[in-house]
Image (cartoon, rainbow, N blue to C red; front, side):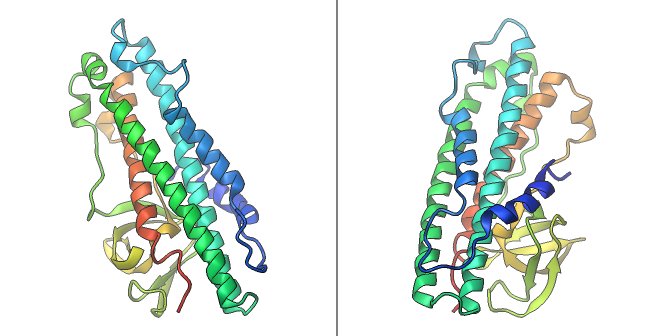
Length: 274
């Protein structure tokens, strides 16, 4: 199941991300998206007094349910903000390359713009890693409380992180597929905006794009966003706390995979063509 608002967000971001070529224009082109991501991350790295410590909740499951529900909502906001920021960065990189190819901007100026964009991306990823570390730290404090209310939930909840496992994703925009994991390789197809496919890591920040178990081609990993996992039947029928805990873990896994996917795209997806 694709995350709600994803397709709509992608369409709206086109107007806010792409900018015409200019002389060594190294200004921040994704300020709104960056601000939203920082704000969403602050709910975890700078938790308010209203966020309870789950390790102290022992008087019933009402507060635990409310806390998990609130955090799941915050995780949704964090994921959407991160996806939006990465999409904007990707559109900026594509614009820089297009300006160079069309001769609108000299190569030296294009290199300066791309270098500034890579620096901002590195800062984005450092911020994402800090948020992820705090998410994991907070999760460790919840194990005892969760196990008291829903024994075994932390052991049986689905975990999808795996370096070589196919990941369900959705195309942020129309994505060109290449014969090889190289920017200059022949085009062999396209993935339409909003289309769901699976990807596996490939060389140089590319991903092998699959559907129906068959590889369709290669594309920069940053062109895709993680698709939300669908709960299994047994999870949908579970108790509220067990369901909330399982979806909380899945949301954290989704964010971790998004960060890994973004890091793998930072090489080839944010370089000028030779």
